[in-house]
Image (cartoon, rainbow, N blue to C red):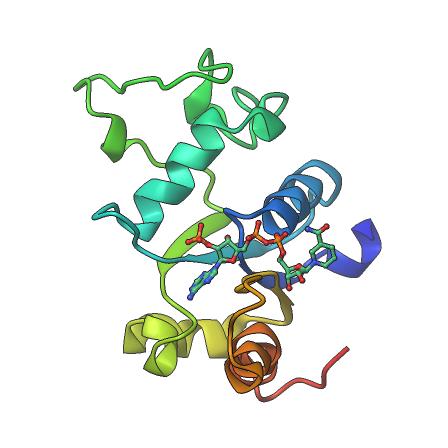
Length: 163
Ligand SMILES: NC(=O)c1ccc[n+]([C@@H]2O[C@H](COP(=O)([O-])OP(=O)(O)OC[C@H]3O[C@@H](n4cnc5c(N)ncnc54)[C@H](OP(=O)(O)O)[C@@H]3O)[C@@H](O)[C@H]2O)c1
């Protein structure tokens, strides 16, 4: 796995979910030569995708071992609890790892709700897509489920073969 991801740029969706969070932790911990990880996170309850992502890194026990290391340096000492920055503002704390970037998006929207400039950057730079965002509701129409849970992987990076 380490060799496969070395020098690669990865786009990961569903990072706030069960599978996506496990994938991110594994990538961070075991693939130090990865070039960049983009994560697409939607806004929810008035909280931006970026802030939700940073809060997850700060509070999810899964990332406890990484907090305070070079991988998540700004979270030193925040072992599982919210920490505030010098201004006492929780929402302003970024993950401070230049190899991870959170991008706001929603896979059910046109262009995945991603700003054009970000979308272009993703399509130019991404080499591996790990699509873990999904609606796991059994009530969804089958066409919606296929479109959002599967086809997004193909269309986010049309220049690459499906692996
Ligand atoms: N759990 C398992 O054991 C397991 C095993 C094998 C395969 N899978 C498959 O893995 C996939 C993910 O499962 P999971 O258990 O991780 O589900 P989950 O915990 O419900 O996570 C779903 C993720 O998708 C995101 N998401 C949903 N709708 C979105 C949208 N419109 N735009 C952007 N992000 C959206 C959620 O973000 P929010 O936080 O914004 O809601 C969350 O991060 C599914 O396809 C599932 O069938 C799961």
